[in-house]
Amino acid sequence: MELGLKAGQVIQEFYWDDDVDESFRARIEEATGVELVDEDYADVCDGTLIWWRDDDGDADDLADLLVDARANLDDGSGIIWVMIPSMGSVGYVEHNVVEEAAQTAGLAATTAAALSRKWTGVRLTARGPRR
Image 1 (cartoon, helix red, strand yellow):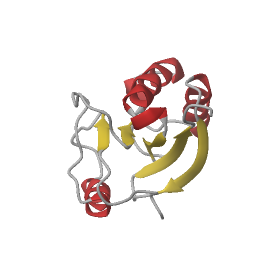
Image 2: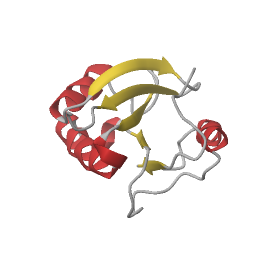
Image 3: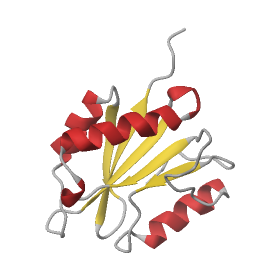
Image 4: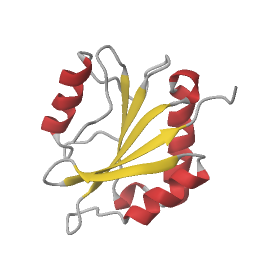
């Protein structure tokens, strides 16, 4: 699965916990050559990785997080991956929850893919300022 990442990009990560897929995180760091930065990172970034579980909140909570994450993206555009537990896993989230939150936040869901054994990634894109 192509993650859409390039060397040198800074990726900000939200809601990391001990249940995340460390090998997926390593793939991102290998693709960019840069360590992931956490939610306290105070500069612009090129992309976002969000680990979202059912007990993290509802679609409105995720939409609020997406708005905040989008504000951190360089020029307001970039790639956002929302990682949700795979069907049947603890914390499973329906894809439509992510899609609803994305739409509320002004984003578009472009891809959903099983990126690891226990996590499914939903790729969201933001559009930059209109020219």
